[in-house]
Length: 403
Image (cartoon, rainbow, N blue to C red):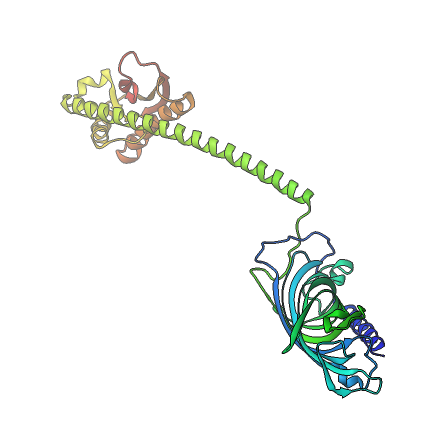
């Protein structure tokens, strides 16, 4: 009868778990590859209480109540994959039943109708179990699933004892865990299991097999750095990502080399530009000093023409040459003839297009100052420009000639 009760309970809990699973949406994509993680990941500890019975050749003796007693258990385990895990468990407390006179644990004062004596003894069973998650194997892993069906099998050492003596036997363990998710950290475990052990554990000389069986309810706590498994990338995706990363590294190195080369070239150009600016400043200082020493232009000098000098690369007039233009404008207005304004640029400095703009810009600048600022008539002025090869000092051709 008890065996039928246990089998019926297993079927009921399996049906309940299947129904609960059918009602829940699968959140993760189906895959069979998951990261195992570190040794410190995916641990759990469980403590439970319940009821147990001792299935032996005297199980039908007297009332079935005489064969039941409380049970306690504590477990420590780890999941290595979503499907496979291990645990160590300590189970025990007290077993009750009936036995013959050869048992060490009988009470000879209580005799049943069939001549068997009432028996009770303390025990513990220390065993290691292999865990197999059916739902993760056949319905895909989902850490948020509300129900998991986990059968297990293992082996261990069982010790029976009371005040008069003790016996030890090898035990094989088998059972099933019905696990219900409460939170990310906590589960409720309804566990049904049995220990297959030689009947010599209770002193019976018949050498038959006895089965302590129990049902317990426990609370399981998950701990460790990670409490769930993460899907692993397929090898093809990893290879592609590595190839793309290598390509990006190569491009980054190439761009870095080009940037370093451009920076070096920029530094060299800046140094050359600084040198040219210093040369231009030194020459301009010398030129300004020389011009200040020139005598004031007289009316008789008009036939020789006038010259207005510019700094390298510029079309703007400095104060000295601008003041000379006022005098030149007065001379032009006092004579009764036409004048040509011809701008020049140095052919040896800069590109041809830039020099053409400089020569024409310098001529236009002198023309605008004479006409707009000093009132010279447009009718007596013409404009031209040239880019020339200097015979000596290039600064002497960075000018506008009026004649």
